[in-house]
Length: 362
Image (cartoon, rainbow, N blue to C red; front, side, top):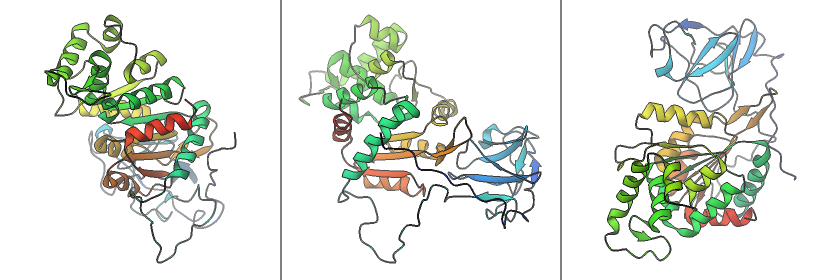
């Protein structure tokens, strides 16, 4: 297999401006969940902090968080998780002048052409995505054995039988290490398995069924009667679908609740911060993230995912991030993060996942 992740070139700290840069300033958090004045806010890029004359890389980053020095390392924490007395990095400069250095160029092998005028620089319905598909196949085949692929999904997949079957094959093939979704994806996937409908429409013919508007509620009610999704699958003899495939392959899934949820299903996490923590626990392992047809979950995942990952051997590799949606706004919203590895594909996600399954030979 020819694909390998882009190599990382660290800054040369034996040269200026790093040699004469001061140590970064530290100050204790004045109270729980409160950062000191002039705190430094993190980004998606690798950031280094000079402490005791040594430049330390924040290994597990997340944007809109703060850097905390503890036990000789830099930890990145959400404001809400700060404890009084935590030593927080201060400084708004990112050019080493205050002992903080933001480094967005570590994965660039060559300077990109920066023409003042050029056509088709954004991602739109007119963009040709053939190369993006080919690169995604290569990445997924590599990550199956060497990485951790997190899929972030909206409910659109559960509305189509071919899309459900395609993603089930992708799970069975070992290309899914974790799934992040909401109550709707799980509800309609289970409704499709139980009653062959999604929101009361047949998942193949799209024909409305008599009293079909009850079907998703009946499904939730039945799952709650059995007490859990695994028990529902067993008692109702379900043998197909996305959640069934996750359970069979022991793929963890996080279902984050919403103010609009029906039911919801038993495993849905109603507390937004508990859901955020559960999502981040999966995303902090991710080496590739594929977000499909869910604006809010996609933006949330994007905010939690850095552009790099520090591996156990200390090496640094990129995190590949894909956003797939029929709406150009959602796709370009992720591009606005400025990530070197964020790629947008504007298409119907049901067609997308069927093509991906075929491209992987499934």
